[in-house]
Image 1: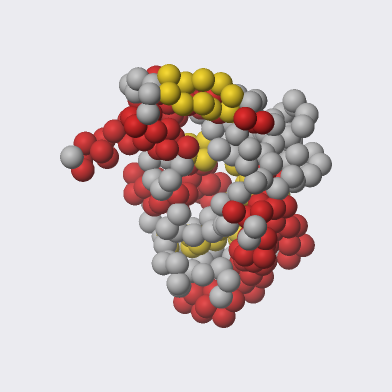
Image 2: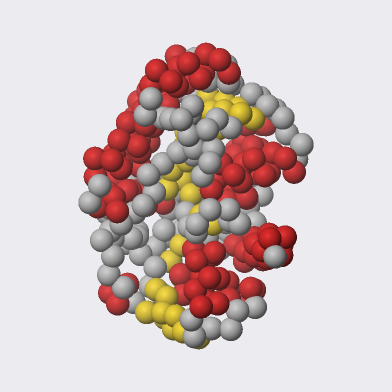
Length: 291
């Protein structure tokens, strides 16, 4: 494996990359702490790159609090735009290739069609806008980039929808979950594996790619599957977005076309429910280990 530096190593995807690398016996991955790998510290990044001399950099660092971002615009933009630009410029200075993780939230999501990489990006939230701005800065700064947009990320690590549903399902008798937003849940372990496959391929097919698990589902149906697979007895009711107002608007439909990443790198994409079964199995195993 090429020498690879992971920024945002302590987050959900960073932890999944570490887990997948360990399972595959992959060496050469560097996981700096938050201070050493701070994407807002340009001088610190130059020092880190000079010391490690990575061939590839995976940028998992991002401001992802979608609703808070509507009030913390400057902070969100600093991380998602300026931070992305910092990483790209330092990669260029040190001749490293960049894999940058982005989001389906760059799309408006008002048309029920599979989203392709070159479809018009029209974000409807501060989070989506700043992630798109980061993409643009990377494209303008560093030719050797792979931007991977993903969606509805979850895993056995960190906080996410699956773990929240399992917790709420154990605490409550009934729940209302939004049924009119459609997307593709993505097991972060699968995404981590795909990223490592891209590095192993070392294919200079730079550009923007989409990756999420196969299939599509509403948050309501996703929650129903979580409870069914997890063996949680709770009554779940479908509700419209209007019944659960949030600061930030979400795309109504953000199912992405994955044909480009599959054909370019020969990546097989698992079906969302199959991956959910694996994840819940891991969550249960971890809870048993702690018991």
